[in-house]
Image (cartoon, rainbow, N blue to C red; front, side, top):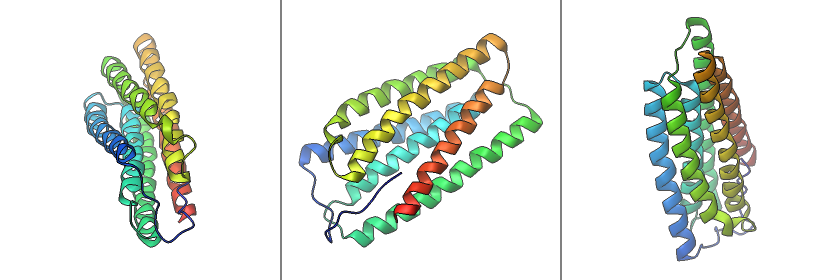
Length: 196
């Protein structure tokens, strides 16, 4: 994720309506992280667990944008670095879990996968609509919009994986979706750390 600090010593202020949009996006993504993680554990789905981490990554991006208001660059850089390290660890955890599931087997519940991924898709579609105003904004705000747009693709991927699991009874599509999203989260983390 490219979260580059602004050139001045302080992050430019956001308007009240912009900050309000980011707070709503943060709350929705944090909620879907908890829901998705819980559902992923219950449904034995790596795809849902990884998708929930993607929601956590976005919540972190929105929180970072809010925290940067009126703060010096070094504060934003420190928070971004901590977020990047956390996401890197979480992404590596997903890949490790994929290896464990491949060796020990898993039995993902396709119904739960599809329902929760659809809920995540609805949330991301709402958020991306709200964040459209940031498409041409500061780099870190533009990145938040771009990655939310990418989340829609990830949600569609998990839904497709759930449908294939339903039809075939194979856990492989769920594992593939989980690994793909885990790699994406790690790539986001790498981008954050490279920018800090």
